[in-house]
Amino acid sequence: MNTSPTILSTKKLSAAQKELLLNTGLGFVEYEAITIELLEITVKHTIQNAIFTSKNAVKAIKSVGMIISNCFCVGDNTKKLLEENGLNVVETAQNASDLAKIIIKKYKNDSFLFFCGNLRRDELPDLLKQNNVEVKEQIVYKTQLKSNKFTRSFDGILFFSPSGIQSYTSENKIGKSISFCIGNTTASEAKKHTDNIIVANKPTVENVIVQAVKHFTKNK
Picture 1 (tube, rainbow, N blue to C red):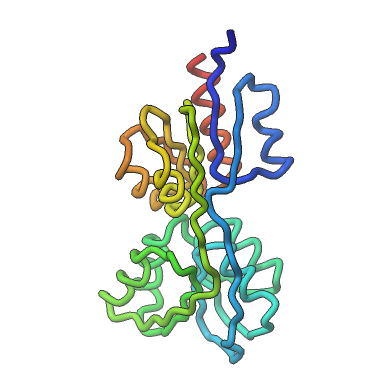
Picture 2 (cartoon, rainbow, N blue to C red; picture 1 turned 135 degrees about the vertical axis):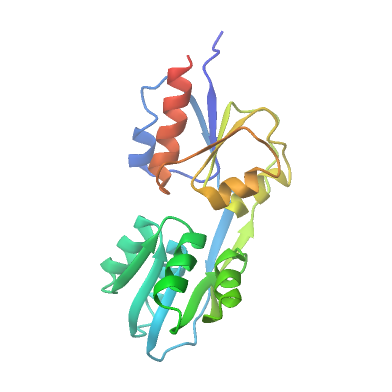
């Protein structure tokens, strides 16, 4: 009888990401907990300072051809995508709260445009407004939750966003599963359902997978 731990990924993984799971002896199931719809953007003027907390926002604006002088972003992958599109990244942080703190400390007198999704978290805009930093928001993509009822439990669940957790828990309980979270913001959402949480060292899909593999192969 196969008693190997099984992991559920709440997003479909690329071939390279699945490679990290090959030959580990772990069972693996994947599905898309959310879908992203990029919206049409009407902002076409020059922007001095833009904030991006996800790659989806970068994907939404990249075909518009707007001129952005300075980009402030969350995560190395978001930074990489901005730079691949010829944009100048002046500050990067590992989460939205840390990025807000950098802006408050070093750029308090500047004004910002925050490109975000419809389910964006409050931490960054709230912190900036509380510290009198001028910030406007432009919703450039829509996140839709895709509920999916599972008739089985999993030893570990990989979560990559708070909305992914909201989607999963709309039809399922986390129960005794270990929640592997891409960052502290996602972990905060997981805390509403479980204390059994492991947060990735870096906010990348690959690191979430590595944490799960390490945990289950170490505890075999």
